[in-house]
Length: 119
Image (cartoon, rainbow, N blue to C red; front, side):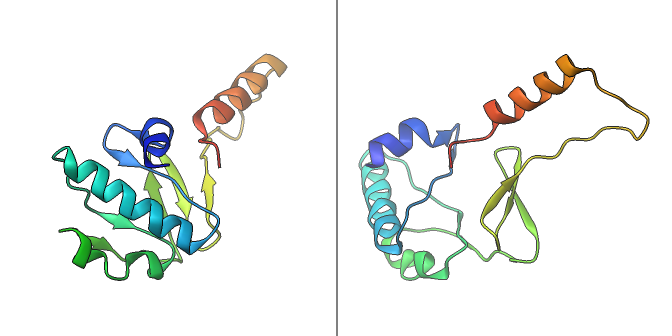
């Protein structure tokens, strides 16, 4: 499972992934730590919207835990993550007077879909 996450859910030095249960994500977390440690990489800066994932993490690896303010969004991979609702937000800035043609609207929508990771 860690190999798939490294291949599909990582970009440069960021891994953005999730699981359906806390047990699944803890298992994945431990597998990622061990797999990368064997190759000389130490994972650090662990943000999570569930404090149970961060429990005992400093015993497993030398890391910096990031406490998230659930009232704010966190920037990740150029997108905004609403921690409290666990949703990814995409900001689109248009001026008030700007009107878009059908083709421009379609292009913007396609860009949002392409830039948004599978959730």
